Image: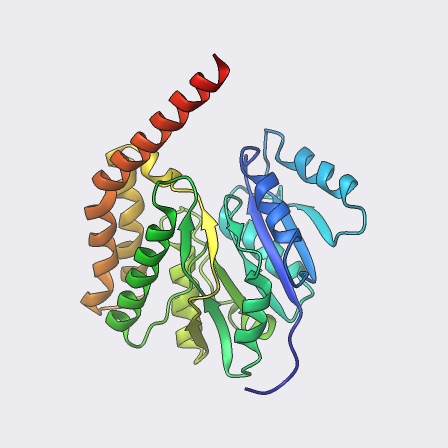
Amino acid sequence: MTGALPTVSIVVPAYNEEQTIRSCVTAALTQTVPAHEVIVVDNRSTDRTAEIVAELQAANPDAPLRLLRQFDEQGLVPTRNLGLDSATGEVIGRIDADSVLEPTWVAEVQKAFVDPSVAAATGPVLYYDMPLRRFGLRADDTLRRAMLRLAREYHFVFGSNMALRATAWQAIRDEVCRDEDDLFHEDIDISVHLYDAGLTAVYVPTMVTGMSARRVDDSPRDYVSYVGRFDRTYTHHDVRNRALRAPAWVFLAVYPIAKGLRWGHQELASRRADAAGD
């Protein structure tokens, strides 16, 4: 381990995220070690996403909060790319608009990237709108460690909780897939390109972020299509390791269980709210 602690930018692509963007940005701004900058990239939102970010800028005039607009085309990849291209930190964190970083996230990212051989890092997630959250964190950590063992050569970075060294992003910037038809998992695509470029990605269990479990609200058909992104991404890259398909089967297996738990959690919260209002 050598070198000084790097500066960390945080990039948040956002499309119609008025329900979650305030919590996301607030958590990014209230780290134990301040981020170099927090960049929200609005992608043609038709709700109050941009207004809420502007309100946070006004309320925190000294905060390094930037609001960019990517209106040229609809899509996560071009929106993400603009944010990563615009970041000025030595390390670029990339999270989703429903991510709520743990307070020590920036500090843990800095520690990981003190090692100059580390090009990318990822960590586990805590589903903050599900019951048994801390148990869920341990389960998520266990699953991701198992995925790493199965993947062997491929070390994945997770879109809701990733960080890239700026030089690593520049090395793969022109190689990552544009995915105009929105068929792939863009984080797996990044992972494959990092591997192909000989760049090292590491798993950091203390690099924790909260995220919503809203994906399980999808219909079974939409959820199966979402999980199918794993296979479509691997097939596109001609990645033949069958073990890499295991996470897709795990996601399919836990869907009915997670959906039931989430429904129960939401129902209980609704009843408590009704009781408080009486």
